[in-house]
Amino acid sequence: MSLTLVIGNKRYSSWSLRPWLVAAHFGIPLAETLVPLDQPETRAAILRHSPSGRVPCLVDGDVRVWESLAIIEYLAERFPEHPIWPRDVAARALARAVSCEMHAGFADLRRACSMDLGRAPAPGPRNGEAAADVARIVGLWRDCHDRFGRGSPFLFGAFSAADAMYAPVAARLVGYGFDLDADARAYVEAIHALPAMRRWIDEAAAEPWVLPEH
Image 1 (cartoon, rainbow, N blue to C red):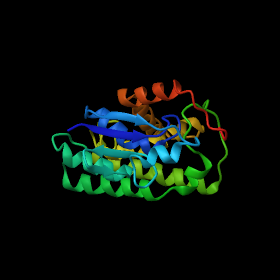
Image 2 (image 1 turned 90 degrees about the vertical axis):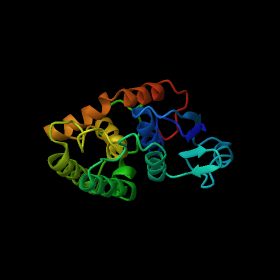
Image 3 (image 1 turned 60 degrees about the vertical axis):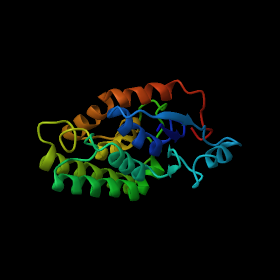
């Protein structure tokens, strides 16, 4: 049974990047359906696949999964041979906790620094609340890496769903020129060095769409 991931523009759609990166990194075959965002026909096109009217949405036969973290969980269950989540119980619990915090939180950073992979790296608009979000994120990275990732560039040793959840943040920190300590900078560089991440960025650069606000 073939799987299709319905996504938005790779330049802008941070939520599409997360499950796509998991699938691409672990070699899970997915067909892609890209719906350009903020076009007159966008909502109708997405609704043909996703009952929420938003991307991403995973289509697996009659199954529709329309939320990023739920898609990642579905892939982990559908392909248990891949260590999408850490195998260790304690590490897996922490990985899920920090992933859920990413999913539900850091709204100030999102508002101040939207993902734009076509943006030339430079300091951008930010506020104290966004800076506080970054400090919390870097603290989470440090805690995960100190407890479970020593000897590896990733949070829990091998690349996992938790790293995919924070990949768009890594892109924001580069794009908006945030000052990072050596450990956080090394982690951001490791995310960007992933072949799957490089592929997404290259394909984003080739897209013809530029949203007006950018």
